[in-house]
Length: 286
Image (cartoon, rainbow, N blue to C red):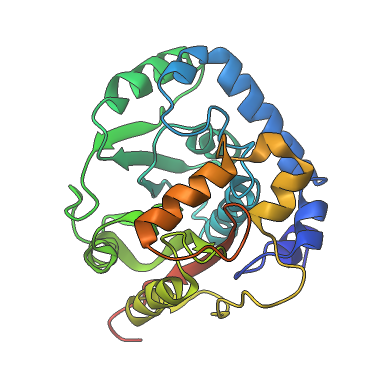
């Protein structure tokens, strides 16, 4: 087992694992690519509705490497050799990440989908500036009704999107429909630790249970354990590296969340952890 496989295990990451991860060659290479991508496509800064630099956000520093390593591991088990593997980035926005995968994992045919139609022109501009083929494709789509055929996709990844949707069970049904038997589903989602964020540990466990009813875990199915000492949290990272905060004013964001939830916060600022896991669609005979 290599260092990345042992670090990037399913479940909630630990602080020590995060510290090791950001020193790895994978993270450094990903960071270099992301920095070049943003400089080359500076027009994206005016269109990002979230953070301007997605990799330099506390949870994405773990999520992107986890998803990358999980997909790379899946691809390495089914080389034919380097047959095209159809990959869907569900709820993609527009980031460096699918372009990094296309460049560094041979044989991927990547399509991004998002309900935001304004991304069409942005993907066109990014693709025109790219120097290689094939380009990353984009499709405007509602994840509740995906415009793809049954069993037409090999890999789906969905990074901190599913928990914010209005009906994740329907979306998981769509993922199950379009994923081929033996195909890989990689999911990450936030878990609130401040008592007021919309993604409570209880709702996160319900989400994980729904996934487990439709898919099998690739390796293991760790529980969402938030009372374990040393887990990675936004509070821990942002206290040390303020530039990794997705909130300009964390306490104000906490107050707004508390008013919306009509509950009293259990911390002094927005505080989350992140859960990652990899699943497989079993064949009808299994």
